[in-house]
Image: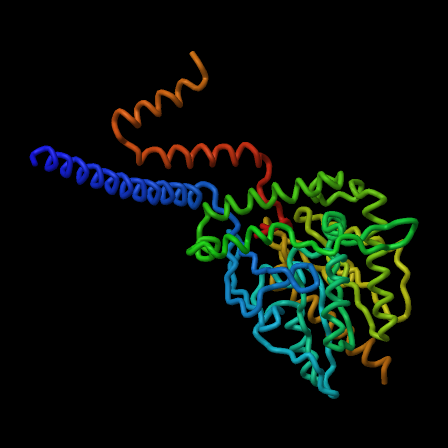
Length: 363
Length: 52
């Protein structure tokens, strides 16, 4: 009797100890996280750029539908929204186009998508607003951050043409060279452009699993520590993919571009131009520069290899649009994406160009 | 002295003092250290984004 009483007390004590330890483990983990979070906020604030992307039915990334998020960096913060089709902004566009509507689709990467500016400040939104003063115009911003020309070409073919555009604008950015190689979606063989990998959606399986973890979405949008881990691991994966293709990470130096990179990018751009020609649609290629420092910008569009036709317009954004403005007024100093002024200038210029060149020629 | 002796010593300390709650902290900090070492120089650059 006395023995069993002692045994019961011992069991109860053991269970109590387990619970006390579990409680202490939880408390210590929370405290550790709080200390790390506080340290990162104080000494090493991170870029908080949530990735609202998923894999599309055609194997490349697309923005999630109906996003209502926020981007926070030390230089800027702004809201970010996508509509029910995953395009920037809340405005909805029907796939079938009314006969009196002039529709423009805009393809590109984060610069085109508008990292660094509000939904209404992207050059696509400004273009739509300006042209709508003249007639019914829809400008659909299909930009996806991290895209290269390869993904933009696939998006145009698989999704863009479904919207029956009258004009296509392509935002070319210097890191497209790098993205075209690492995506492995196309390759050049015997002077011909060949579709290679069917799918390029790096690490999205990690994102899909993480998003199922309760609280991860909140932490990825607010925690500097979680973003430190996310950014580090992501860049490490990108570097590994780059090394597999025998190229370093992206650096804005023309001499570092290999002949293979240049040829692939030029052929992808030529394919883009051809698509416009085949569909009897004008194509504007915006050669958007990257700011290197406050006095120097960089561009690497392989102009000499492009097969232009009378439906294609090449725009040197630095020379034709930004020339008279200091680079730091156009770009964020550290992040280097375009500031609202950069988007406004492009939007204004495009609006005048569409009215004076493209519409005038059709009359 | 073996390089692993500190781990053994720490394990002995946890057992003796029954401070099991210290375990996850140390494991977590070790993993963080390993991650920083293996992703050295991988600070996110402009125009290179988190993948997930």
